[in-house]
Amino acid sequence: MPHRTAWQALGQNPLKVLGSGWPWRSLAYLLSGAAFGAVTVVVLVVALVAGVVSLVVLVGVPVLLGVALSGVAVTRFERWRLRLVDRDPVPDPHRPAERPGLVGWVRTRLREPATWRELGFTAVSVTALWWMDVLVLGFALAVPALVIMSPLDDPGAWPLTIVGVCLLAAAPYTITAWAGARAAVTRLMLTPRDGELGEELTEVRASRARLVDAFDAERRRIERDLHDGAQQRLVSLNVMLGLAALDAEPGSPLAGQLAKIQEQIRLAVEELRELSRGVHPQALTDHGLAASVENLAARSALPVTVDIRLPRRLPLPVETTAYYVVAEALTNVVKHSRASRAEVHARLHTDLLALTVRDDGIGGATPDTGTGLTGLADRVAVADGRLRVSSPRGGPTLLHVELPCH
Image (cartoon, rainbow, N blue to C red):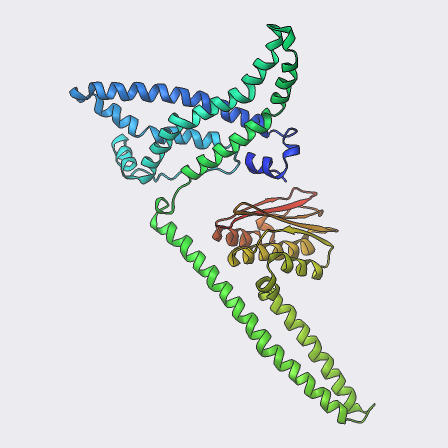
């Protein structure tokens, strides 16, 4: 699948990193970070000094105000630059100005917590991050180059050429690793907090989470009622009919009718069991995600390969979300994809569950074609996860979900 970040590409498939564009994108990210950081340091230092010196005549007030608001411009460029190594954009936390004009814009920005957080990020960037970019680039590229050229001054130092070549071969991994780590820190610091999204949007997110939790609790209650109520009554009724059949004359019409009734009850019990598994599978509660997905695969009309390796049980909300993503995805495969097989793959990367469902069908899955992708995206969003779908015409279709497991 197309990885969303350089960190994912390096962590999930390091052998293929060299043949991808991630090292070059990472190199461009670090080079632009070093250059932009150097320019930012010079501009801010000059502006800060000029503002302090001219403060006695009040001319420095606008200059210092510009320094305070510099984080807005710096982070805007950082969000744009971040797309080199992280394909998902970071939302802009700033709201529209309350009044038109420059004064209204400045007043709005000065009252926003995001403005001061961005100023803090700018301070961290100019004092540490861009220096780290320069150091990593020097260690990954400049040092190997100097070592390789050592025999030019001392022919007896030719073995250093081999050392330099080995160091240079490791450069793509070093550059990609630091670019991924730097991008993760940048995203963490620039992602809007709930308090910055506005009270209405925060309440919408909270209410949507409450609705999903209530819906899951109701599904579990219905599953218990079906299992402990209707199924048990039907099983008891089937036993009673079996006892009555013992008193009927073998081969008589009554015995035949009782046998037919028993068969219908047996089918009804099987249907209820299948329904209860769809409402909330007991295997998910008792044995976890891997076992419940294995059960799904065993009941699927298509061959499904399951490769789920988790070091521990995940939080129940995460397992529930992942299970229904797989269930809906496999249902879509059977109904719409014309596939001959499907694969389910899941791994836990520190505190992030990466789940992938792939099929070899005809592709073309979109939210507008009634495949349930919108509902899946909503459920994943409630869990603060991310869902990505790749389904070109002609296939294959790949659904990738990331769920945090804090």
